[in-house]
Figure 1 (spheres, one colour):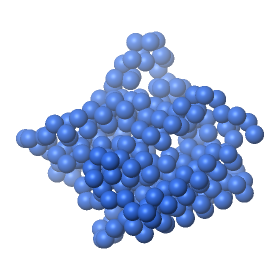
Figure 2 (cartoon, one colour; figure 1 turned 45 degrees about the vertical axis):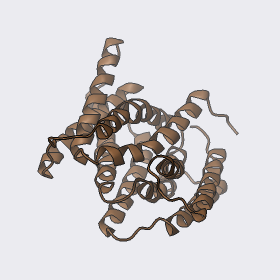
Figure 3 (cartoon, helix red, strand yellow; figure 1 turned 135 degrees about the vertical axis):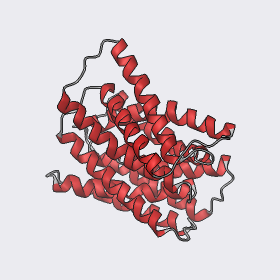
Figure 4 (cartoon, rainbow, N blue to C red; figure 1 turned 45 degrees about the horizontal axis):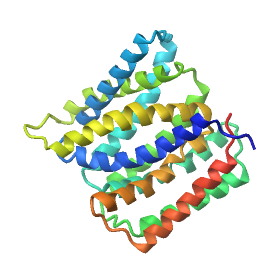
Length: 288
């Protein structure tokens, strides 16, 4: 089996751990900040900082088709995907939202298969094992209503999986330029949608929400999303989507440690099964 380079391994760890923690960060941020408006400011700020740094370093402007492609990816991943997650976390616990997002790799395998890349048997087994773990987790998730949230999360998982497959077939700007454009495009779209939803900046915002916003901007956007762009460019879609298997255990663990959320024995067993599925996906996937 072809070994992974160290940058891919580090990028995967950042996506796994930092993005897992952002579910809790979003929960604290949207406690006082409107969800879509918070996302708009977050992505515009992070994208502007990254784009300014790249231009200062002499990075060339990409072509218009590349800009268009990166903007589309950013709107799908961030404006729709992350924006929907932020809205849902105003109603549901962060750990539960993360658990439901673990179906993403299943769709990634299916859409990649439709694109002509037949999954290996071990990949199928890893996905199946991961879904079994998710089923165990959901049994104790106390999901007690809000069917619209479940449907929206399922739509996010499908869009993320399709985008992970499609982005490998389009020409994106090289390196961090793609991440900067994606965040800027997503931020601008959210800035338009947020007022249409009636969102305005509240008069009082607690320090915890501001601290969570800063963490999401620096670590969730500038660092982790940059790592995710690298993973998308160097790993198969099923492995690139495997973050949705690891993020739930991280989110549940942090929710227990920081927010005092209850973690049962069934949830612990489910998380172990989920992690076993991720290990199988990593073993089966080869970097293109």
